[in-house]
Image 1 (cartoon, rainbow, N blue to C red):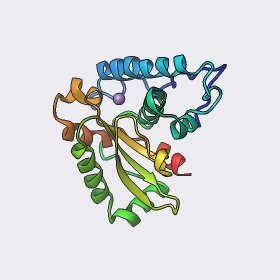
Image 2: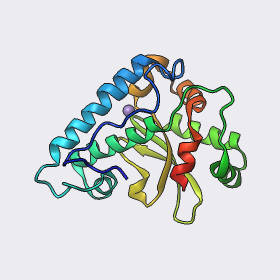
Image 3: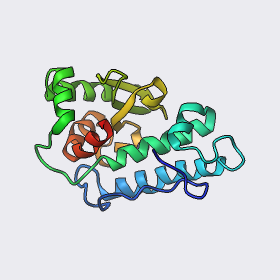
Image 4: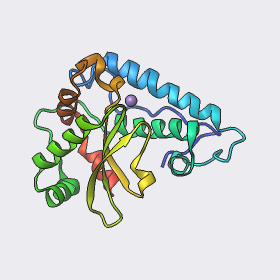
Length: 199
Ligand code: MN
């Protein structure tokens, strides 16, 4: 849960330097995507809170109950926090470990089948949005496409992992090649974080 501090949400503190994810994500992409896009969603969200029904609520509670501009900025703040906090320095051959690895094999057949479906749903999402891995109420893993600022929380799912497919996420490093961006991102996923989210 992400709580406001003295009435305002704050930028997450990245567990890596802005150059550390290169060449998967360049420092320039981090500077723009994290430093400018996320900061703007955060500023807009904080500006909307004073005097509203959302003052003092966690961002997850706001996402589940808000609509319009408040939902869009809260959703994008939460989505980007989850996205940026799930990465680590590139590691060739990086694969899921622990409980999430067992669950993926059980629900998708193999790690490769899961990654293929996740990439296909990310590549196939028309326009701007996010591809997510979540757990449903029974613990079964599901992959969903979420448009714009949507988050699986609004469907009663527990979000575990997400790849941003808005053009601003990949255009500096991959230009129009969204499938290449999606395929390369596996090298920087921190599966320890995904396991923590699974609980
Ligand atoms: Mn983004």
